[in-house]
Amino acid sequence: MTVLPGCYCPLDGTRVPSGSLDWCCPACRGPLDLDYSPTPAPLKSLAGRVNSLWRYAECLPIPGAECSLGEGRTPVVALTDNVSAKLDFLMPTLSFKDRGAVMLAALATRLGPERVVADSSGNAGTAVAAYCARARLPCSVFVPEGTSTKKMEQIGAHGARLEVVAGDREATARAARTAADGEGVFYASHVYNPYFLHGTKTYVHELWEDLGGRLPDILVLPVGNGTLLLGAALAVAELHTAGLIDRRPALHAVQAAAVAPLAAAWQAGADDLAGEPVAAAPTFAEGIAIARPPRARQILRAVRESGGAFHTVSEDQIRHAQLDLASRGLFVESTGVACWAATREGGPLGSILNGRAAVVPLCGAGLKTGVADPAHV
Image 1 (cartoon, rainbow, N blue to C red):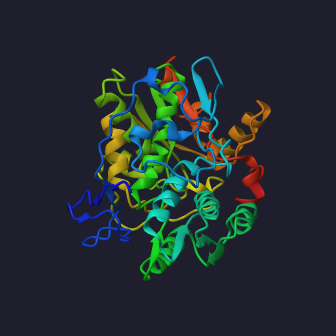
Image 2 (cartoon, rainbow, N blue to C red):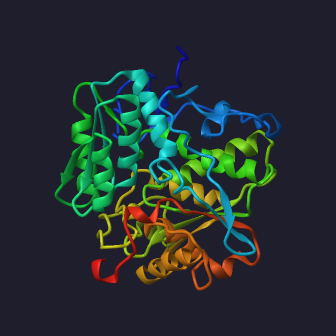
């Protein structure tokens, strides 16, 4: 069997060997990074490969996955003359989280735990539940009370044990981490486990291939825990280091104004979050309503080094963006429209584009949450 890369703590350098069920740094309890620096294959060598994210095998830390559901290779469609959308809601579980979940399930099958535990506001949980079902792994998913009924139905339908936590997203994460410390438990964390980031990075590898070996000037990315943005930064670095792109796109991060700790830190010029967590106000963008993301320092650095910035959108902007996309034939969940809310005319990014090419991800299907209702925010 192929030896998998080990992990290390980006803060203090503590190493965790491959094959360990440790889910965080044993010293500081922070998230881990993967000791892995792959070289992507050139564009011409991709022709004829499997039509899923596994076509980028040279860049994936696991050589293959029997639990694959054909995830990846989502289409790109134009929204305006210079803004396109990547339809990542067209995934097996209807969200981009499949990119990382398949990596976690593939890793878990190699480690052979007694149980898999995950926590989520919905989409990551449904993705982990689905891929654990595919891999025949017992799974428990912790979700906060108030999670979309449709998302909870989906988790249960895949056979996972649903643990509804009284409290917000942070309380849910704490409950899952307590369970994750149990004997023989694999914590399928889309935040702490770096394998997830090496799945989400395929979003950018696909864009690069579909755009003929280039990337747009700007990548607009939603940020809660930052898994898509950090994955994008990984892929951009891999492609640039290999000489497959000659410039790096700017990463522009979007948060809901109701819960925007990273945008606030950015405005303050800070390298990390400080003080008490922000209040978890109600928002249509439940999937990115993270009061204290564990990888905050990494997210802020990635945006800064790319020449990008942070932006926030209001509840009205989110609601109108969802209806606007629906009028164009795209029914996307309210979290998944945040980037379009920021980029469309009247949004904070609209005046910044100045004709530059940008891509926004549409991350989850509208059927997961329904139409944003002002009476329910």
